[in-house]
Image 1 (cartoon, one colour):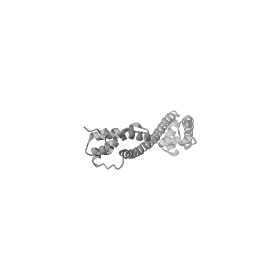
Image 2 (tube, helix red, strand yellow; image 1 turned 45 degrees about the horizontal axis):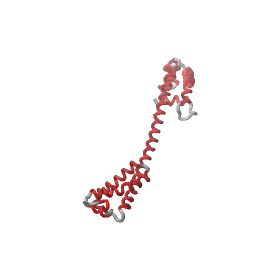
Image 3 (cartoon, rainbow, N blue to C red; image 1 turned 180 degrees about the vertical axis):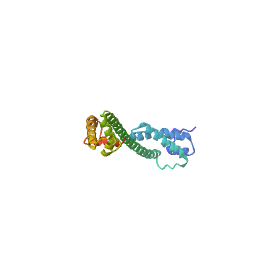
Image 4 (cartoon, helix red, strand yellow; image 1 turned 90 degrees about the horizontal axis):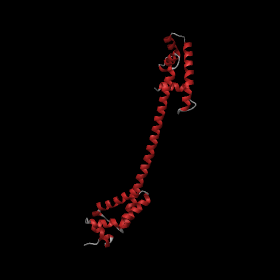
Length: 207
C-alpha cells in the first residue's frame, strides 16, 4: 500500500498525471493552507480566498495530464495564486466602481423624481389658487396663461376693453404671487432669484 505522505512533490505530480486521486489529495493537504494564507492576506476576504484555493486545485486536476512544472511545486502554486489574486482584485475594483456608478445614477434618478414631485405639487397648488380667484380674474388669467390668448382676443371674447383685461390679469397675478411665494422659497427651485411670474408661466407650459 502506497504511503503518499512520504512521497516527494515530484513523485506526486507524476502520479497525478496518471489520474491518481490520492496523489492529488496529498498535494492539496500539503499546500491549501499556504495558498489560503497568501490569498487571504492580499484580499482581506476569507470567502474569496477559499474560492481561489479551490480554483487553483481544480485547475491542477483538470490539467493533470499536461502539467509541466519546473522547480518546486509550492512555488508553482504560489505563482498561480498570485495571478488568481490579481484577477480577483481587478474584478473587485470593477465591481466597486460599478456600485459607485449605480449609486450615483440612482441618486440622480431619485433627485429627478424628487424635483418632478415638487413641481407636481406646485402645479396642484397653482390650480387651487387659480380656482380661488374672483371669477373675472380667474377667467382672464386662464384665457391668457392656459389658452395663450392675447389681450385683444380676451377682450373680444369677454366683451370688455383691453384695459379691463390688463387690470384683471394684473389682479390675478398679484394674488397668485402672494399665495405662491411661500412654496416658491420652500421647495427646491432652479434658483432663488427666479421670478415667481416666470415660474407660473413655466408651470403652465410644462403641464
